[in-house]
Structure formats: C-alpha cells, structure tokens
Image 1 (cartoon, one colour):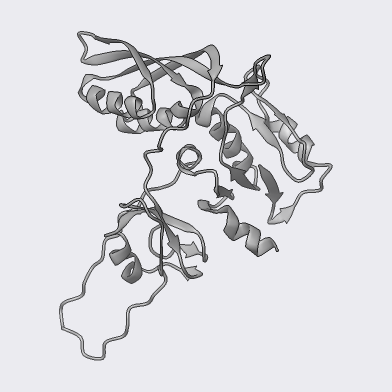
Image 2 (tube, rainbow, N blue to C red):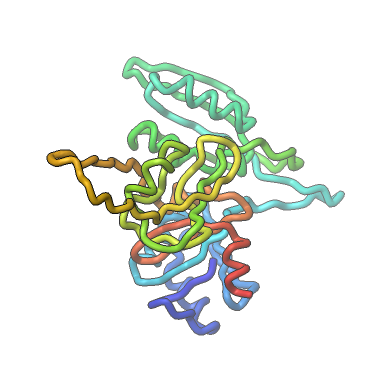
Length: 280
C-alpha cells in the first residue's frame, strides 16, 4: 500500500504515523513497513481491509493497493503451510445451488447443509483462506446484504496448487481522455463496464470485465461524428450500464499483476506494468 495526500507523496517519516493512527486497535489488525514508501497491512479479509482503506480515502489520502495475500508459515521441514478455515454461512435457500457451485470451484469441502423453516440455508464448509477471498463480497451482493458469514481458523496445511479463479479477462482503455456514450455503447456489448460516460480515463486503465477470458484494449473516448443532415424529431439515446466499483469488490477482483488506485473521488484499477513504465 502506497499513500499520498492532496496528490503529493507523504514524507517517508510520516507514513507509519498515518497508518498507526488509522489502523483499528483490534488483535486481528496490524501493520508493518519494510519499505519506506509503502505499508503492509494485515487483517481479516477484504471487508475489514476495505474499512481501513475507505477511512483513509475519506480523510483525503490517495493510495495504490496491491493484490491481497494470505499469511503463510513453514513447518519444521521447511514446507510452506497455508491457513485453513471453517466457514459457517447462512443464505436464502433459493441461492443454495449457486453458492455451493461457487464453493466447489474454490476447492471447499462441504461439511453440512441444513434448511430451516424460514427459507434459509446453513452451510458449513472448510476451505483454504486464499480460496475464500472474495466470497464475502459475492455472498453479500447476491443476497442483498442478508447473508451471514462466520469463520474460525482450523489449522495450517501444506499449500495446495492454486485454483483457477473464476474471473474473465479485462477491458483496458487504449487512450486517455473522457469517456463518451458513443464509444462505450459497443464496448458494453463485449463485457461489464466499470465506468459511465463523461468519466476521466487514461491509457492502461481497466474500464470493464471482458465476457471472454482474454484481455482486450478499446478506445472509450471517441466522439460521434457530426452529421450535417439530421433526421428531424429523432435522436438516438444510448443507455450505458455500468457497475460502481467498491473497495471490497476491487480487492477481490484484481490479480497479482494488477493494482487499485484509490483517491477521495474515485476507485479504479490498472495493470502494475503500466504504472511501472510511467515511473521509469
């Protein structure tokens, strides 16, 4: 996590003070700084980290957030161990099949499923912590905030191969400027947009999720050509459907080679290599 305020980088000596002031006094939350221009924060999932980032954002800070990782350890033989947690999930019964399918793709072990008389389903499962990342946001969104998730650390086990993340490719802006409905209309036929019209964008910024697995670059700032002959009484209206990005969603969406740019005014994502090239 790298932090700026008022578009200016904070003094290196100020960074730890800012973070320590804002990190909640809770045993599950702590931070440390090995690099002078960044801070590593440790917390319990994307929702807790999201609260801290949102608090900093509202105070006027700008940050670059890297993809979150779980905390590994090693056994006496040097084998890498990962945390395994037991999850207790309560959701509306109508969503059970979708949730179980999602848990299966994340290599979760379903221990128990119980339906109650109020059309709710209780699911008990065991899953590696890194595989469950993003599930809290997913469950909250599909249940419109009615889901309940509790978890506890069960054990550390030898790290298993990573599961194939259920995310498609991304749509990347090929130009810098302000988006137009004329440009976004054909782009929304190829994926789910993260930006609306009249939105400032820059080359390399992620502006949507592609319907397919590959990344694509598209121009989102083209202006509709002026037609000298207009059809009287007829003007096409273009409706742009887009998703408002939250910090929690972005944390669960980005991959290891991507970052989140957080400012008081907006939350956007971009590839790391793009920002590194700008800094060179």
